[in-house]
Amino acid sequence: MSHKRILITGVSRGLGRALTDKFIQLGHTVIGCARDKTAIARLKKQYGLPHRFEAVDVADDAQVERWAKAVLAEAGPPDLLLNNAALMNNPAPLWQVPRAEFDALIDVNIKGVANVIRHFVPAMVAKKHGVICNFSSGWGRSTDAQVAPYCATKWAMEGLSQALAQELPRGMAAIPLSPGIINTEMLQSCFGGDAAAYPTAEQWAEDAAPWLLKLGPKDNGRSLTVGD
Image (cartoon, rainbow, N blue to C red; front, side, top):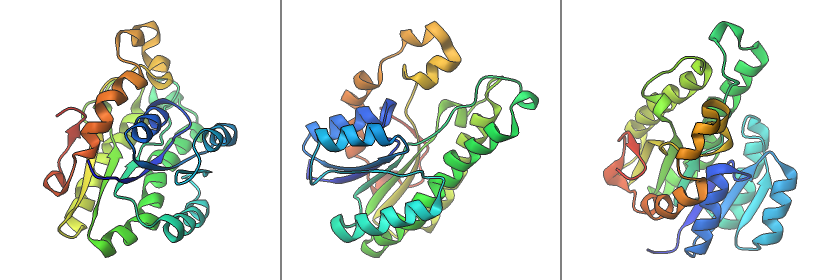
């Protein structure tokens, strides 16, 4: 596999952190962000240049704009953009989910993805090159009780990504991507102890990272699950 520049949001934990470690192990350059300044400091200490990590709240368009300008000036556009950052609501009937909690999911899971696309994708379009994966979920294609806000945001990723796919030039791809079911803190909040039956983020990344690197224009607009 040729060397790639890979941009990942939400690198502080879970799938984002596991993918960061695996992509770097495979010899690729990772550019990542997360809100957790302590976690970002650890990543900077562990991985020096050419890897770049910044504390950025993707829900804040101004922060994303500043980050994108710096990254694009120093490293150029990514070959693979993974919009991974997301929040999960505390399981509850929709009418019991506090307004602030619902708003936070919309801000990160939908607006955050749009912010990253707004500020990074034009440089990718200019080169007619690159793959954009917006992380969806099994709950972006089906539903369950007590996770209505999360379902709403992941169903949005399906529509947003497929519409974006129709707007990109030939040579690019936008993909709504379900990672599958992985034992992360997010899953534990919903499944409790049953989450242990599923692979850890690190186990998942062993196969997911090489699989992601093979995505290309042939996959534009396809609703995929890792491993398909």
